Image 1 (spheres, rainbow, N blue to C red):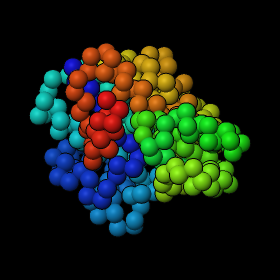
Image 2: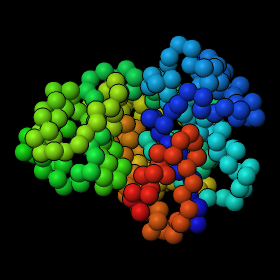
Image 3: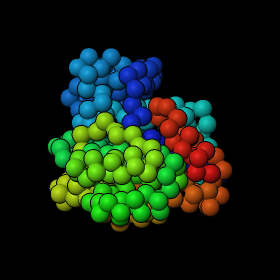
Image 4: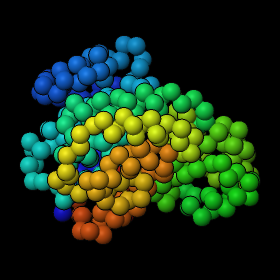
Length: 278
């Protein structure tokens, strides 16, 4: 059994998409119309140095992931048994499953990017080779209850998020206990309680979208469980301030019989994570 998995923010690189913009020109032109700028120019040349800006990164990755998927099914038209995406990539999974068309999906992602880029408090860090129990014990010792697990990527890679003051205190504890960490270049504490004020505004926007029944099972980031047709607004809005349970998603897919995980998008971040998880 095959699963398509779609990467999220952090996988973007200048040059991504390449000749796919010309090959799938209909989607390229549709993206330009929705966004009001050239998606090809942004991804290939990035003249204004905006590709790593959340406001632009998310629509760019959603578009490029879509083009990679269109190419993938040309080469291998056999349908996937299930779909999943990491954070932003979850929108590509829902697109492929039929929840919405490309234009509506891009409008949703653009709104999400606008909301997330408006948040300015906090930061994130990847914690390496430290299991979840040890991490939680360390944070408890420092009375750092304000820090959330943003991404549970694997047992050896966990991303935390919180206010900068709390993160600085956590870094001092990590140094004392020889825990390896890498602060991430992000503008806010994504997938944490700091995003909660954005949740209702996003839910209101989503209620204006006409969703269609899913044709393929899609796993949700927030708990690695399957979407139902009536849970889209609830789960997508909750995803803003919930942990990305990627490790559990991969294990759940494997438990249902998935043996081939095909990453669809630029890079191989999820492929490498899958190797660690499995």
